[in-house]
Length: 178
Figure 1 (cartoon, helix red, strand yellow):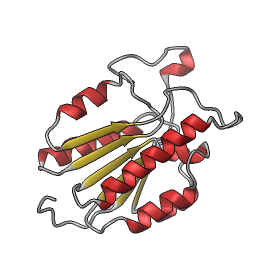
Figure 2: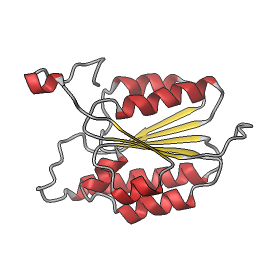
Figure 3: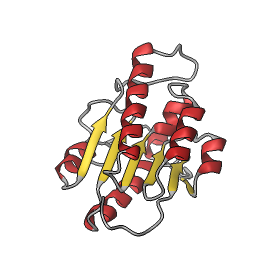
């Protein structure tokens, strides 16, 4: 672990607006520039062609892991057991990295969505927050952050959608949104 002397906090980036992962990755970029050891775990996004994955994996002292089946999950659908298993595997990897003493910053991208879709329980995530060593900074991203996770966090930022190109039929663009 680096000689970082600050108290590790819990940050949550949530809301319907764009920018949650981008905010977390901005923090990663800043921390990497200061020599922090970083773990980033992508929940739900799967092993995909996400542009950020390739770039992040190339940074020194940054570990990247991606879980999920890369499919749309709907609240009204029956939970896919394979997707739930992927979320559980991601949480196990998160717990290992948070508790290992190897990382200063751990980012759990889209974990709030995994909780919202009942792929993980809120209690499991709250336990991870509670067990987090004091020096580890923990960032949780994703829409629909549970009220208990918000209450447990030290910093919460809600991205508010005022206007979005998707509303005009413009789909996500490679290199900009993914």
